[in-house]
Length: 422
Image (tube, rainbow, N blue to C red; front, side, top):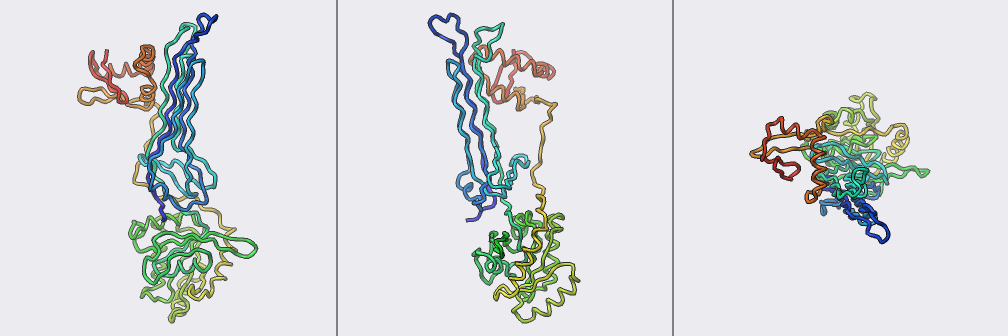
């Protein structure tokens, strides 16, 4: 089954905690701290795979969590790092942060690796905190949490040539005749509901990839008739074949159809509308086609190549294939074209390390930096609490809370951990 969109949750593995330990060996007085560091958490990694053509695997499993790093041990032994979780993903997939709409990755090559959720670093053991003024530290860090977010995946087929046109104009029949693709073919509208890919072989071992894009209708640029779902797959094609029912068998005017589809491409993306186009006048075996073909040639006035073909009989298809193979090498790969997403991309202000807001009886402190320190602090250890208090002072949170009017005994919430202000 073909799926070209998915939404998944990914979380990198948490880092292991650092250890608090001291050397206890005979004949080694005052051996000093020997707590090792925790291991790094495993990351979630996407790898492009040209053998995949759909995101169906992500329809059945939506949550992926990385392997946690092991905790540090005595004798300065560091914990084992977590194993990365590698997920194969089709080439042509764009990865978005679902919360912000920001593009995280664009998988365009086989074997391309992208870390989409990094594992947290391991916490430092007490051996790392020894200094001239503190020979026996009892301080260690908890592991850093792994990155977590919801991702939106969109597959945009990577094809050299895209077939576009109204429903039932013969696109599926054309791709079935020039390649080994076997799309569903029937005499009714919207027989094709998912894109089909086919490799077209030419002489001397040359080949190109052709995509059969499901039928477009007027208003497709606004999403009508699943317009966005279909138009997305034209964004990376180097050449567009505009297929017309030149016979008018659907009681439609081929010239009007040409204008409507061109307008839909332009309204969806002005850049996409500038792609090279070849017009394929199909159904030449049906009476009345010659008359419409002459009208089309007069209207076009040589501005675009026109190939008169009959997908049913195969007439003219070989010349079309040779022409495509001839002009494709001179057409450069298109730049990525994307619709503006409804999500707003937000960027953190590097000069603003935290925010304070009042909610009922709590002063709530928010910010990724201080929230990370909260998660990496052992609050059941006096030395760790003392270090955390110093961090609040250095970051300016103490002064900021006083400026907000905090008083003795007020409640403070930082990253879900609640404190009494003293």
